[in-house]
Image 1 (cartoon, one colour):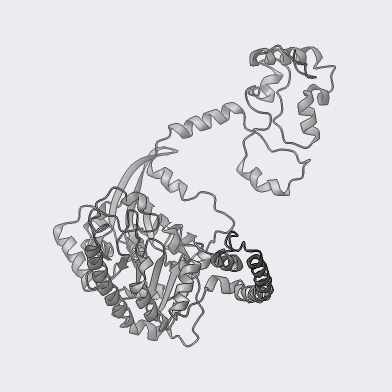
Image 2 (cartoon, rainbow, N blue to C red):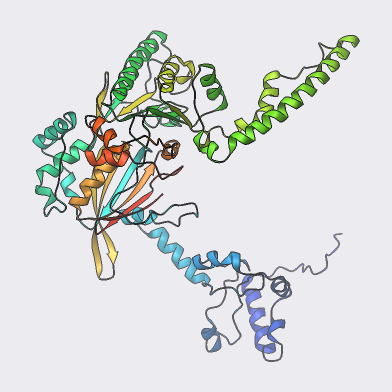
Length: 560
């Protein structure tokens, strides 16, 4: 026979019966019992402990005082499941345990809000509202200005919204499309007025938009998405890859890729190409010409990296630095750790020799598994392994080291996957200008017009979506066009390829860099003068990238 527990009632009561009992008690004892004793025993204990609980309704039936105190509490809800208000969430750290809770929402209001959110259609307005989601404390907000900071990350999607239509970006005529391609190939500079009255009739605007969408890619397979490459195995799964088991075809692809890679680097050194990206299945490399990002020499940034890759680069004689770790005094910590490890190693080596000689004397040295030297080395170098695959592992190579890096990447066997959906596929080369073996590609753009709720009924909401590998020059060119077409008023949500966000790290400044000389040397690199001026600035975003941009009265306000 089960022993009854104290305070346990074997008879089950349904929620309506419990509510009736509470109402009956409140009517009969409401006037005589003090307010502090009207609460059930568990609630009194919780309140004494300082827990913020939802108050019970006062007595008085369904009308009168009960209606004045608000609707009754949901009996199926937990006692402490009150909704968290945004203001309360901010004030909570400063409130003590005895602080009074803020005004609470009733459960019916919660259900109504949830039902409205669930039934709301997924429109462009909802997407634009997501741009204004609460930002973390690490987010950076700039002061208002007429220009955006340089952003070296690759964007995968841009969503612009405005009160002015984007219909001018759709259905380009054959002549306008051809003119835009010719302007891109000839690096023609297009100057638009500050405000365009009728953008749909402005041929210069439409041609310039077509010119902005062009980029160059190698290799190019129409059935295979070649960007992004990191984490793209799922997207590529099931696609045809005839080279995955054909070594001859793999050798041919890598030979062509090496020629294209060398061609791009030669253009970069000649200052005819401002920058380009090498996208592998493990990391991404950004090569920049001298004069960009505050540097007077050619630079290369690699992210993310691993200890194995850095060791391989050291063995090839490539000099590099870790800019983010140097700022935090990482080198000093590493030196101290190395000294400690050297002392420990000297002592442990003596102990190991004595222990192994003792095992040999008793004849069981073959039966005892000796420690793996690689595991011992990894354990001693754990401070280096901790930054692997993180933004802090970004590597900077400068000057002549970039040429050694070029040869290293061409001969590196781990540059290409040996298994999986990307097996045998060379890395992707992305460039704003043409190079040997490149294929001309276009970013995808489409405009959407929807009706959104307003106080007086409905209003038009216009949006423009651009998808693809959006490089820094394209981002700046599009914002310059929208400045004129949307009359200085629009907002944008930007979605970056996260491994490339760290390319905005600030590099060590060169004191002898002259901006005017750099602009003069890069005048034939194929970029608009204003775009070139922006990319010559010292990066300010650090490990982050632009997330939201708003322009109002031709003034930018941005978040990262």
